[in-house]
Length: 347
Ligand SMILES: Cc1cc2nc3c(=O)[nH]c(=O)nc-3n(C[C@H](O)[C@H](O)[C@H](O)COP(=O)(O)OP(=O)(O)OC[C@H]3O[C@@H](n4cnc5c(N)ncnc54)[C@H](O)[C@@H]3O)c2cc1C
Image (tube, rainbow, N blue to C red; front, side, top):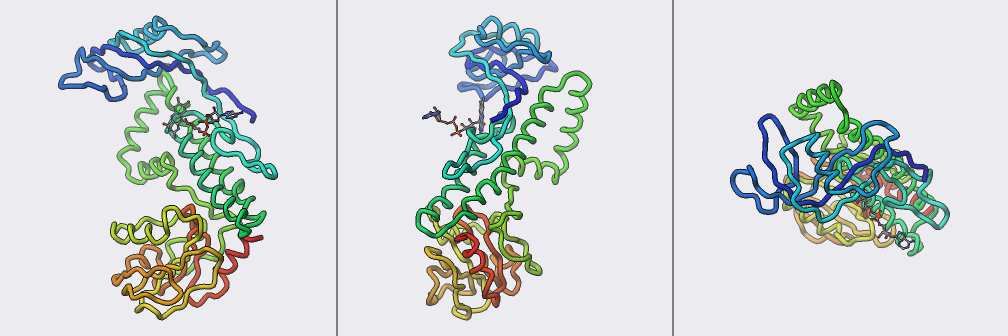
């Protein structure tokens, strides 16, 4: 993996005394034993400080407590380290392998992409890589998936890794600005934090809930008229917690297979399940929960909340992948799209 170094930090797990000064803001993890006024409270936490300013300044591989104290005195003040449990240095690199699949070898997590810890996305991204890959491997081992399915891992996750690297590098640069640029940054953050769409976008980036695989070969079917979802997007969350619980239970938290959700706002039993792939769960969401032949589960949704959430006004079908992403969206009278999704996964 080609890496480029961004900056170096000293990381310490220390006990410290903190005397807050006027107009000084010190950001520390919550104290283990904080009570009342924080003045002269004893803190146990991690203190993170940049240890070099100029590009090319060598990294201090063995930082001492005295050196960390000096940095705190110079740059913050009012913090006295009383005990150091461990001190270390770490460098921020960023880099990404050119591909996540080499024949039978698949790369995921830090083996595939490394970046700044700003935003706390490394583990999250790696876990989502694993989530994306695991069910595909299971499908191939079961004889239900082919090369297109395996290749879709790189196609779907490589751009996500590249996006995280770009975003966290930007956060790191913004976080280590100095002088006038720093003041501009603070003003921009303050202004943006009161704009709801901006904060939603930021939260979606950091939480990685705004990821989609719309361009994937596994995203099958055109956008339906009125539909609020399209193949490649994550299944939306239901605002009704009871419905959400029932959908989760029907899809199965440990499910390594797909769910074909058929939404029919008429009474149960009016529409047959779609022909699909092996091991799938057939789920019907309709006006009442009368069991219907061919469906593994029926959820009563007399008010049509699920259909509304998906934007399937006249009903429809949604193929839900084991990782929670949508493989296909089809109308009720469409007899080809669901089957086309499974054919694609098998190819
Ligand atoms: C300071 C810091 C703060 C962070 N904060 C966050 C955060 O808040 N949120 C977040 O999501 N992420 C955070 N991260 C990133 C997160 O820790 C990593 O992205 C994540 O741990 C990577 O998991 P991984 O399983 O891919 O790799 P690793 O955790 O590196 O696991 C790889 C494992 O493989 C083992 N191994 C290596 N070589 C071999 C071999 N040849 N044979 C057998 N075993 C081997 C290693 O010993 C290790 O146990 C942070 C990282 C740093 C440095």
